[in-house]
Length: 528
Image 1 (spheres, rainbow, N blue to C red):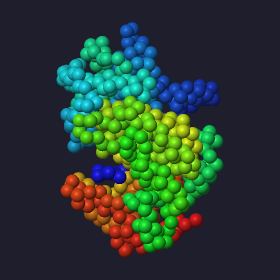
Image 2: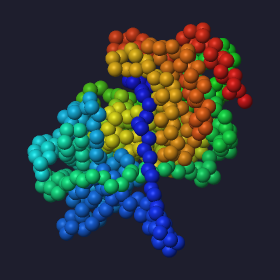
Image 3: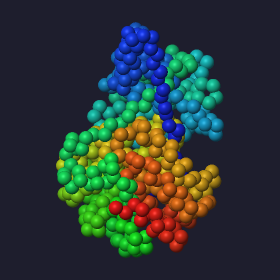
Image 4: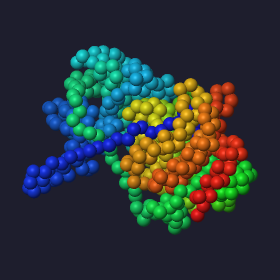
């Protein structure tokens, strides 16, 4: 948890398709056409069209209602057409997003906020910027580059972002990545020249993430058993906790467990890239947790560097932390007991250095980072690691290019989907007291449609500033059991500080005797 507000997820996306039948033969033909045109494996045929126009192809997006010229023979991906479209070939990637702006965000604010990553001049080199009017629409062009990353195959490190303003409340963003430098004429001007809009004719399709069968994971038996015990279809909800001093020191946690008459089987712990060689406490933390009958939700995050020193996620993808990561993975592998491993959580939040907000608004950087670390664990034969992918409940900024789905690394890299949403209270201007069900009803409904994997609430809590925290907790216990696919919930027992070091958000689980009593009463109903 970091010093930033956390809210519930975006409104769910739904799709309804009606098939009309005019007799048996016609009906069968329609069913065949539906399968070919609307099936997940051919979704680009249903929601977009690519047609040859000579020097370029014409791409038409029926979901967002636009067409433009693109490079010939690009592969079209409309897997997340409710968010954006992706076209790609070996040397170029084009991402296109239609952003309908909220009332309090102007087009200028959207452009400025989206491109703030350029303040990191250690990694990003601004090369060109212009504003013009094309086909009656205001167009903003920003071009930049960064160093090629040695651990990214065929790295596309040359960028241009084209923002096309439509009316006063819509912006179309065309983000281009290339392996070679882009010039202002042949490099991307063709994307703008014939850009036109029309009324959308298709509802969006969102790909459903598939769970990989346990037998294909190669886990050791203890890890398989742990997954079945805690994440099986019939598993009951189990509780965990973040207590800042554990697992280094269990004194406070044991006091809490005695007070509540409940032993938390799961313990959240944070680690970072402490140096370029070896994490100093990882082995002891794993062993201490195991000795105290805890399974760690082990979280690894990159840290902020000093101003002017660049972004650590780029350093990781340049191989500078290979020795650290190999030792980290080896330590976890040799531990040989089950570990929930959460890498780069809340990546769609601008408070995280590995967010695309800080890395060229390029979500592929996070996915490359995630997959690279995963590969190192594979090479270490870490057959005891259950991978948890965990975006924040709401994206900050809440723009389509920063949507959680754009960070999803692929089914083979994810075992558990994590949910995170906090009642942050009302300490800061603009914050609202938000009840548990208001936070999690829409978030769970969205995730339950998009992901087949088991889920867990990787961290959550309520502040006590602005409302009745004890009543919030009672409401939480009344609602949480209805989320059948959420198998573990982790309470974050800590606090957020303001810029002056004052407690802004007290999330303490033992803040008052009444709160302790509520947990004691309600946790009894979850004992096995």
